[in-house]
Image (cartoon, rainbow, N blue to C red; front, side, top):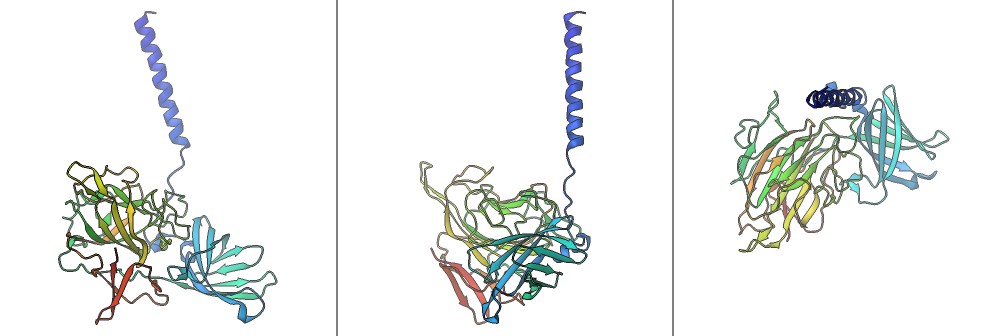
Length: 382
């Protein structure tokens, strides 16, 4: 056989081997976990997931009762985890400290969570805590918290990027049949310093794990990612919802359950550069998630993740496509000028969200003032 035909024959064998290997690998790869976009399709685990708040008695007397919050998280196929907080829920009573993590299973219409010291049964409306002897030592009720900035109207001078009526604010946007913006687009214009209001909804993806659970993000100027992720019930670390991706974790994990509308209110100031192109000050950032301050005028030293390199030129802001069906609505942006005072009010917070207001305290450095109309106005201090 000539060298030409030997080469051709050998190359064909190698090519066939590679093709068979790729086909075998594709066959072995598990299918992507399902992601549900509506409550009616979410299955029997979803109604049991959520936030519960009430009391627990640690000793025999009523005097030992303590306020507690419980977040019940569906993990798929009837499996659950739960996080308990003494004092209340994150952003509404719990002021930091120890988190207690448990596992549980669904039995019919009830989740049963067991530990050596007690058992919790949650039915989607209430949760009862029992001692090992079977005595009821705690009672909680489900709460559906609402961000106080949900539905915030753009103030005078704001640029409406998406309101469900038009799509000119984004490049090649994808819009759902019910008028919601999908991930995977960027603003049509570039903006320098700005204040941004946006609302997002995470899919219910109980079998997803880690970064494959409702992943998207706001890439401010294409440089700095503010993570969007189903981190409900988690610790809230540097790659979870509310984080400046892999750079800074939020002060508190304010991620609500999936299929719930959530809000980001972001105050963004670009880094400064001198005439020679040398950076003279870092980008600064303040973020409220669901009405609670999670980053307070923090300096971010560099771009994050796969972001574009820092520079003096404004760039568009992206809604990251991370192969998860996240939807957005009510996105508007208020450009800032050099003379814009840091403590100027810009987001109206109607006092809403019964039965448990999401906002029960304010963070140091935050300006709170009640207007004559009876709403709270947000601002920041430098």
